[in-house]
Figure 1 (cartoon, rainbow, N blue to C red):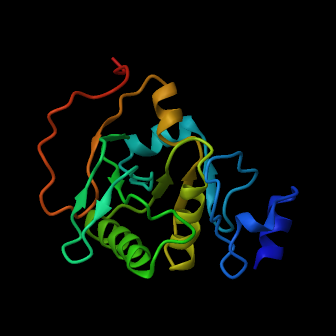
Figure 2 (cartoon, one colour):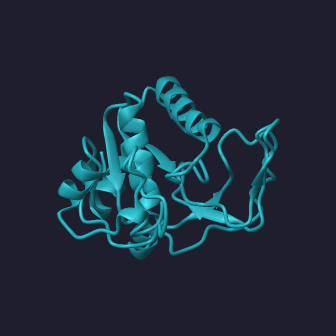
Length: 190
């Protein structure tokens, strides 16, 4: 698996950064990513904006710094707020290459349910710019059989740089997210 990944990337890579069994990035998650995950199309800022306007399902896998998830209830205790693309569903930590099986199930089952219930065909996976977590998550979803996947490599950073607003986000399936009391971050479109 690691050999195929290295050939795909076509750049010298420290093998300690990738899990040899899965090919997922397991360390130093911020860095230039030369190619999309196998079977997943990379989209740019313009395409992401068009897909959001067309009601694509946006999946944010940005990490939650200092957060803790209750293993029993699934509720998150966040150390700091997170802002995301409007309408996105946040699955914090799900893009880690070393995520536990429960987190991987949470991501796959959650995205499947959201796609099924919404009737949305396109699924856009993102994080921040140059974030391997979105790359990992897109590959996990592809391997789980989901189709119509797109990887937004510039993520919320690219969205903000377009002059579009970010809004407060709460982890998906959080049983009691607090009310959105903060104002959107960024510049509005109009």
